[in-house]
Length: 375
Image (cartoon, rainbow, N blue to C red):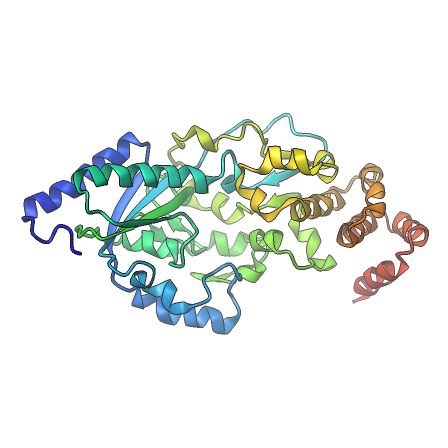
């Protein structure tokens, strides 16, 4: 059903203006509109990424669903896209001695919930204006390429690092959208403004940005930290003290130097500090983990994955005194945790690791680590 097909152009425009105005009352920073026509321009790009092995594994597996909104909502006509800034400049002092970093996407409350609430409230308001509204809401959960939907809706342009950049908010904003059966005038796509700058390409610690607009997810430290597969020992040092996500390509971006701070207090790290105590995390109970991480964007990967990352971070701290916190983990009932702990001890003190391996019948792990050292 084309809901506004019988209305004149004045009402057609007025509805869009009403939606924009109401979005401001919800504290939404950015809003744009695009049609639900297929994103055919994505087809060769997605095919190339798949052929090169650059996919993360988190994407929708059926390409047609990534391209065509009407495979998700048959009567979709327009897409209403919102952007919510999450940039906060918070106190970087008072860090625990051994601390791990959460990227800004995991500061404060889980953005999926925050944006979904705003989208739902926005949709309920539109329903008051038009009771026949049909919609589906998505926040990083649908089959479409969210950034490309937002790009076509005029929320930003693509940076060389494949993030979406807005003139006022930089690349520090989350994306959510409503697939609707409304017919709304689409906004214009913005021109790219990254010509001549190569900082994100040069500074990416994983080498994931292989060139302008060429992103290899398998090399991105953010994706490495989220994967459940074993992280090879030789790649662990590059992770530093990161627990979840990586902000380097955004921190070096000139477009992010003077951006508006987020008005959304939900993204201020309060209950869970962004400098997480590593010793606390490796010893955390399931109950306490749920309390701390259940409403945080990093919590979806689970206790074991974040504990693994904390162990790697301790191994990268360069302080041999941290070994005393790792040694008890050699008795952990989880094999993966025992092996990561031994690898972390090995990185801090090879002799201590050899002795521990003999005591805990893990000499085969030490042999593997030594063999990799010789390569």
